[in-house]
Image (tube, rainbow, N blue to C red; front, side, top):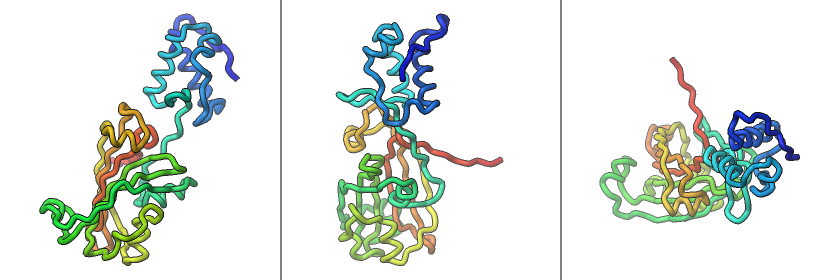
Length: 242
């Protein structure tokens, strides 16, 4: 229930409103996905202008506490998903979190004459499979993954149903691959127009760009993947030691 909790005349009104909204979230009175009252109602309740209300809400949107949905309203942002510290497929990771994984195929091509750089990266000769997928969790788009694999090591893999099957599961079950480790490089950037459209985010929402090189039990590269993760739904956790 909303009530006027304004207390101090020394603190700017928009900052007080921000604090009230944050406290409601911390107390569990507002949960992820809950919609806020319209700006007009908040302005009347807290006896301030709509401009002041808009400033408070805009700052919370910029801080990823709230999210605006065009034509729908302003909502409490969903909790962020920590990027796992163990090597798991997207499908496995989402399933372990109690979410339903899904994929949409954006591109699936065979490169018959890969460049010298591409062949050198994979340390492999012959045709390459390029697989680009939009990764979903509970039908929400979370990431774009583009994988590059050597077909000569995995004959027939280009015919698999990657919309409904896990790539890592196929490699392990059908090709006797044991995935051991991966090297990752993570950067922060802004999405391209196509990425914004696929991920259903605003062009001002940052994204994580991850390059991953995956190795099997023989220390052989089996995949190079370039992924784009939503910055408003993911965070990166690390442990460091001295």
